[in-house]
Length: 461
Image 1 (cartoon, rainbow, N blue to C red):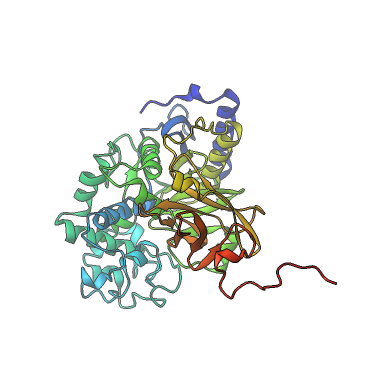
Image 2: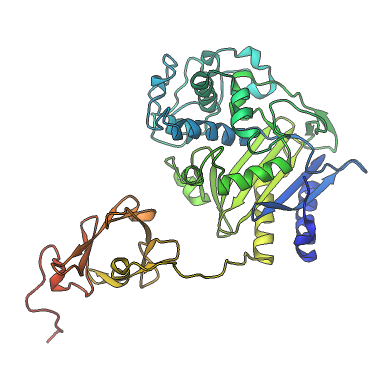
């Protein structure tokens, strides 16, 4: 993979190198490699290594642990988009007899199915998958530790179930389906379930001495959909671009936006730390910036993929140590460095190609009670409702083609905006989920529920 490091300013490149150098040195990682993506292209790769002359590059494989879950989630969303499944379906409909069939597919994807975090012993990440040949071996005698759907509780066995779902409905192994339906279309040639040279070895670094111990690299068997994959920063850079823009051969941009939305109940500590989980993707806030992606770890390896969608910048960081540098802060800082030093240049403003007079009649100032809002029409054909105070409920609306509009986000997501017209065809008021918006605060002709005081507005006297 060719990187275009000259596309970043020299100061930016040095700041990026400094950040990963500090992470590798202070975290005592045998090696660390990072790639930054901007506008869908890798623009910088930096490496650090404890071995003179043997620094990795963007083509060296590392184990990526739970970033594998995002790949598995893509396979499940493909089945949904083809109409094979519904995410609201219980698992029992497709995999009967697991003992956790009440959980829906969406709840398994978002870690809210109530399943245990890990398999019964021994430690599945350091032992052969052959010890757990069946789903019953993965789930154990007490597979549920929380009520289904009530809280976010990260579950590795939940993704083993999703992998088994893919296998049953596709009639092929999870590995085969992944390669055919995701890796090959996206040209992720250096991503797979087994290492292929050149690849890094996994190490444990002693917590109190600068010495290392080699870690085993086990085949995880049934648990593979939760954490088996090996990949490179080059491949994960391409995957990051896909997670933002989509690829109709794999998954649409709309389905990827769905994956990036919070989908699990969160705990108070998660709210405080700015963490949420979507459908196979982690959502975080750091330094005022929203980031999506996933972290991963297996004995001997750490991994992180972080995407600043609004900044159009992503970062991938891989290291070959069991514990050491915290890679999410590193990846988040790489995104921040580029976004702040070289902010995204917006596309030129361009007007709509055509102006619909019936839509133009909707724009301008409206009032819900005494609260003022502006309704704007943008070049993408969407209506945007924005509070005049700068704070409050704001939503974009998509036309339904019949004169009504559907909310896309926030409080009014999914709600219907209906212009109510007078006999002459002009707009009298707006009905938004039963809320009346008039051109004046409590305007009489807006048919305000409860009526308007006949004495009108007045002062105190």
